[in-house]
Length: 159
Image (cartoon, rainbow, N blue to C red; front, side, top):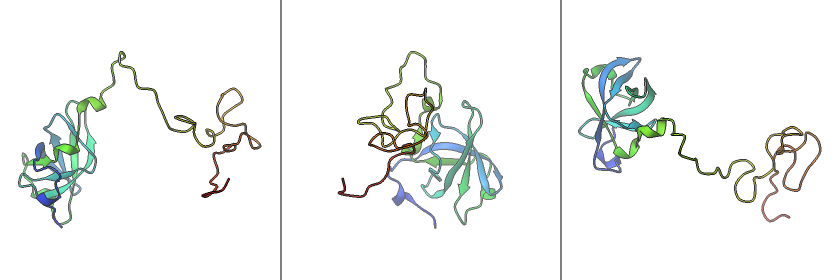
């Protein structure tokens, strides 16, 4: 099955890479865009026909490569070095997402997760020692919201 323009949420495709060689049925390509593609993002030809999906991304951050898992019926060996591939711009991430954040910028306070966020989590962490300050002791039932190994599902409408 070949997907065409009707499956694109955006009417525009951007050049993302150029073909280098085939390897084990996949197309190995060099990134030509300053942004990084999502994993499993659909890859198109210029005529907006889907040929495959992003499989693996590798190489240094300033010279990245990725492989394309070709759709059934499309063979990577039929590509010629230099062939261009395209992607939906909504399936790209900025390079800054993969670079370390400068020390001056503070991260927003973490919320949610186990034991965090509004009202605390269900149950405690997984155990924890006497000096830890979170989680329950190893034995017995401690507290009303769970035990030593997390909360218990009580069903709907029960008290």
